[in-house]
Length: 178
Image 1 (cartoon, rainbow, N blue to C red):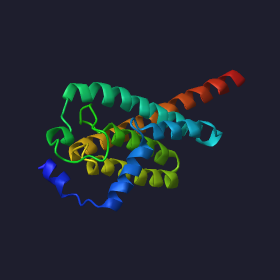
Image 2 (cartoon, rainbow, N blue to C red):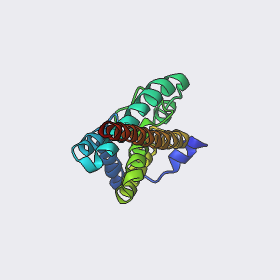
Image 3 (spheres, rainbow, N blue to C red):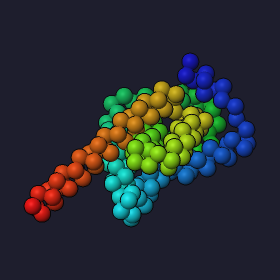
Image 4 (tube, helix red, strand yellow):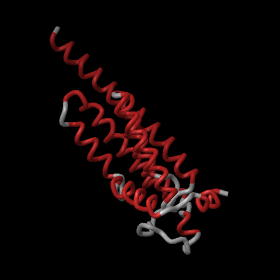
């Protein structure tokens, strides 16, 4: 059923080019989110958000890329149907979950929790990245859904961790001043 959904996605030369660009921007390991996280570190107003984006990225990398993908070992659609003409190099890793989707939604969630307008724009980018993974025939819809959920959970957790640490640092600084 999931495979038939992937076959039903309309494909055109324009969409091919568009989603190749989206995939390339995201990077083979979602490096765009590392760049975003590091860039946010340079400004005091966005520093904690940058840290949260990076914490979320690391959480997804460890839990999604190393643990879940290896534990579940679900074959990708392009491994099941090797006759489907791919627009990108055939990945060797497993399909579940989509860590590209998780990285994107983790970053979007962390940004949204601190900066609503920027977060909405980031969620749109995350949705495009997630859909591109299905368009490219690299992930099933349930891989994407799992990645989205995982990313949102890691994004929320990362912001909560940053807020807790900042609160403790502020409390410690206030205690030292008394």
